[in-house]
Each structure stands twice: as C-alpha cells, then as structure tokens.
Amino acid sequence: MSSPDQLSGWKTTAAGLLAGLVAAIAMTVVMLLLACFGVATPLAIIGDRLSIFIPPEPFLSIMGRVGGYNHLKQLGVGSTIAGQLLVGALGGAVFGLMMRRDPIRRAPGTTMSIFVLLPIVAVAIALWPVLGTSYRGLPIEAARLVTLVGFALSVFVFERTLVAGFQFLAGRKTADEVGEFTPVIGRRAFVLSGLGLIVAGGGAGLMHKLYRAASFSYDGTQYKGRIVQAITPNDQFYCVTKNVIDPQVNVALWHLEVNGLVENPTTYRFDDFKAINPIEQETTLMCISNGLDAGLMSNAVWKGVPMHDLLDPAAPLSSAARVRLHGVDNYTDTISLEKAMEPTTIIAYEMNGEPLAHRHGYPARVVVPGYFGEKHVKWLTRIEVTTADVKGFYETQGWGPDFIVPTRSRIDVPDRNAQFSLSKLTGPIEIKGVAFGGDRGISRVELSFDDGKTWRDADIYYAGGDLAWSLWSAHGGWMPDQPGDYTIVVRATDGEGEVQEWDQDRPFKSGVTGFHKIVVNVTA
Ligand SMILES: Nc1nc2c(c(=O)[nH]1)N[C@H]1C(S)=C(S)[C@@H](COP(=O)(O)O)O[C@H]1N2
Ligand SMILES: [Mo]
Image 1: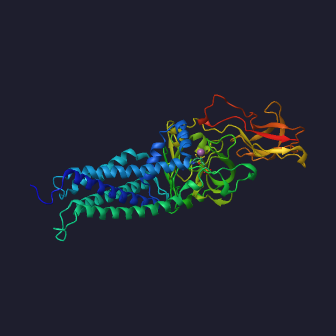
Image 2: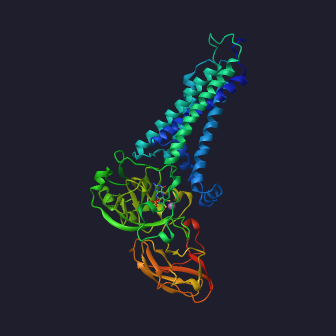
C-alpha cells in the first residue's frame, strides 16, 4: 500500500485546514462583492436574525459595553466573518482527515452535498424571515431568491476552492517535482497561503469600500440645542437605522405591494403610486429610546399618499386587524388597521420639498403620527394586512408595548451647566426649547426655576399643530435676582389638557417619561 506519495493523516488534515481557510476567505470575498451590489449576505442578515432575540436591557448594556450601536454592528459583522473563517477551516480539516486514505480521490457528489447543499438548506431554514432583503429595493419574493442564489454562489466558491486547494497540496508530485530536494507539500502550502493572502487583500479593499458606504457616519445623529429650528433641515434630521449599510433603492426595481388579508392584492410601481393625490403634513418623529435631554427627535413637512388610499381599493377582509409594514431591509413593524386608515397615516415620498434621502427611506416611508419613530417604516415595500398577533422588529426585542408618544419637552437653550454672572448680564437670559405631544398637539408650556416648586407660563412662539412639536421660550427671558444654583424644569400640556408627567412605573423600554431639568449657576 505504501507509496512515496502516501501522506499521513495529520498531514492531510493540515492540508484540509489550510485549503478550508483559503476557501473561506474566497467565499467571504464573494459575499463582500455581492454586498457591493446590494445583495443580502449572511454577513448582514445573521445580525438581523439574532438581534430580535436580545431584549432591550441586555441590548443596551452590550451596546454600552462595546461603545454604541455602531460598534455593536461592527462587532456583529466582524464576528460573523471570523466565525465563517473558523468554520471553513475546521470544515476543511475534517475534509482532509476523511481524505487521508486516498487524497487524490474525487467525490464531487459528496463535497457538493456537504459544502453546498447542506449550507443552503441550513441557511434557508435558519434565516428564512430575513432572506427577503434587498439593499437595491427588489420586492421581497425576488429578494429572497437573489439572496439564496448569492449564498449558493458563495458556498460553491468555497467548495471548489477547498477541493482544488486540497488537491493542489496533497496531490501527486508532478514530473518536475519528482526527485526534487525541497519537501513539495511545504512549498505548495507556501504558494497556497500566498494566494490566500492576495485574495484576503482584495477582501480588505472591498471592506474599506463598504465601510465608507456604511451607516456608521450618521446613525444616531441627534438634533438639539441652540441650532433647533421649527422645521429640521433634511441633512440635520435625526437618524436611526438597524442596518450596517442602508438600502439605496433603485426605483426601477422597487414595488409597493398591498397584500395579505385583502380581497384585491395590488402592486404599485413608483409612478402609479405618485399618481395618487398626495397631501402635505407637518409631523414630528421621535425614537422610543430618546432620553429626556436627547435629540433623537426632529420635525419635517412630509408629502405623501394617505395609506387608506391604498387600503381601500385592496379591500381588507373582515378578519383583518393589523397592518404589517415591511422595509426592503427586512425591517417590519405593525400598526392597527384602524390607525392605518386614519387620514394622517401617510406614505411619504418627500420631506421638506425634497425627495426622501436614502437614509430617511427613499423612495417611500411610513409616517404615522403619535407613534414612536419605530413605526415609521423606511424603504417601505409591502403593506401586509394581517391578524392581531404579529409583531415588529423592535417590538419582538421587547420595546413597547404601545409605542404611543407621551408628552415631552426639552430645554435647548442655555446649555446644561451654563454659568452666568449677574454683573455681566446685559439683559434677560434666553431660555427656549421644544415641546411635543405626539398627535395631540401642545396647548401650554410652563417653566420652573426652583426645581418644580413654582411654575410660570412660557410663550409658545411656534405652534406646530396637532402632529408636530411646538417651540417655546421664557416670556421676556429670565432675570435671576440673586446668585445661586437654579434648577430649571420645563413641562408641557398636550392639546387634550393632559399635563406631562413622570410615570415611575413605566419601564424605559416603553419610552421614558419625566422632566428635562438643567442646573444653571448664577454668580454675583
Ligand atoms: N426600514 C426601516 N425602517 C426604520 C428603521 C430601520 O432600521 N429600518 N428604524 C426605525 C427607527 S428605530 C426610527 S427611530 C426611525 C428613524 O427615522 P429617521 O432615521 O428617518 O429619523 O425609523 C424607523 N424606521
Ligand atoms: Mo428608533
């Protein structure tokens, strides 16, 4: 049996390990290339699939520990790549071990089944809910197919590279190599590693390109403080996204489907959709995670189509209770059918007179007044009429449950911990900020300079209407009459006469309540 070519078991295992690692690198590079073309790959959607299982408390604590949402996302993608390389290398090692008796045997049926078919089936099952993702805006069914084909291509490249790499390492010596002094397998391993490094270098280049397209530079943008105006300029509008790289929808590929529990499922192309009579509406959005002093809140004039203009012709069935809104990024959230039919629930395609920016949901997003930002689904592609028991992305994580914005107010000027000197004051101190009552409007704003013991009315100098924030300022400014530390507090009353309050028992995952306070130091 023993021939000069016979390799020991550990040598074939090592050869498999190296070939597996190089194959996994090649596969990862294919995935990065696909990502450049907006195709969903496990690198992005594994995170989407897993993050719904992390409740808000650990989610925020992990986020805090790794240094924010951006770092968490980077960690997610990084560990997926590392995991892929590890599994690839180990898979290769097992393959090498199995091949020890006859390293040059070819069994494409077996390797295809194990390294191509099996992973496709596993991914199709494990990632089914997030496969219908397309960063170019393909409809969900088409996107699911494209994601699977892209994955099939990736694992096919893995399998071919693994087999070829292993054959190269463990195969017979060529006529040239017979009798050579240098150990052939060592030299071939050197060549294969070099190839692996070159491919990895290409991958690093792609990662660099993708990094620049990523949402890291703007995710978490806040709008607050001295700069706050009635209408937030589009490029300063707050921004939150679950995505590492946000969709850049190509409207030629994009469809808006209305389906589920309806009599007439309908699909609109962008032009059909824009042909419907639009309305304009000023509406403020705020993230459920917005802290009392934070700026995940902004206001815009939206132009769009009332959702009932799409639901009416589709004719919801009598069993319909909720509407599930799907973004092209596999993000979903739900609203009741009743809320969906309200005339102010719109599908917006313009923001302050401009087409939506990509990061705010181009070509179309939901605006659903009175609810936290989570429900305002961006990059909308499907309106699915469903039964009562479906949940949205952040809702499944455990945020909510009701997503109704409690009345909220914030002091924007002066900065917290501001210092003033009575002798240097040339006039009253300017105090101003915002107040937001969901879809109930704002009827009154009051200020306290003694931590809530006494209150006086502030002026509302910009009234945004029922659906938007109002801007307020201290009437005539504030003139402290003696030095000291002043705790300034603001509270608003909504259009229904309810005074803003602190609900001690309300968990932060329902959206915090309470009062924004700043301490101002006044010296002689
Ligand atoms: N498709 C999609 N829609 C989405 C999100 C998302 O990640 N994907 N994020 C939501 C969250 S958490 C908020 S607060 C708002 C933010 O909208 P903005 O970035 O336009 O301000 O969008 C919501 N809609
Ligand atoms: Mo949010």
